[in-house]
Length: 264
Image (tube, rainbow, N blue to C red; front, side, top):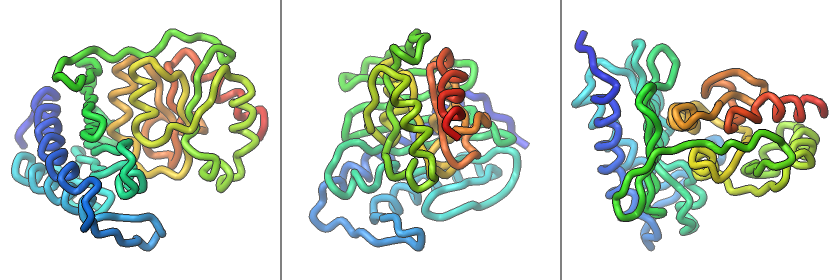
């Protein structure tokens, strides 16, 4: 079996994201956008489907032995290398014309995400990382910069994004959220992939969210970890497989978990 370097895999993911951006931006705020409802009652647009088809085709051509997990078309193939795709994270924003949405592409090896790309063309931003190679962002003018989480070490000084009250309420965890909210300096519901990228950039310190799938999280993990942060489930399980997420600058992780557990 052909072996690929992490640099090669990251280059592929970035190329796939660039192609995806052209497709999604062309459909963003389009008057003929087709929107349907999936069995889980979440919306899907023709742009979600077109973006995922494009990414899948690129992976199949470049990495024919790798498996793929995508939000719209499920799993194909098997093996230790799996590409994980969320074609448009923030579909509800996308279909309402809100620019906070992006394409998420990850590569997991033996279940561990090692490459992650988050591309938000409506914000004209992109972020990426590969294990051992640092985390990076790209400005509107194309300039690249290293990502680094904040050095905030006390909950009382921390800024929290909790995504939505509904997600916590549906899980019966509003008490946990309120306990965390009362422990921090500031809390806002920024939502979707942008919260996590603001964390990686050092602008936020804690992000927590429920009702997630692996494709919502996998690309985020290498970026946050390579930026010096920590990513787990809200129960403290590492990685993107727990159905929810707690991401922090690392310094605050245990304290955030403890604050939430105090209300359970």
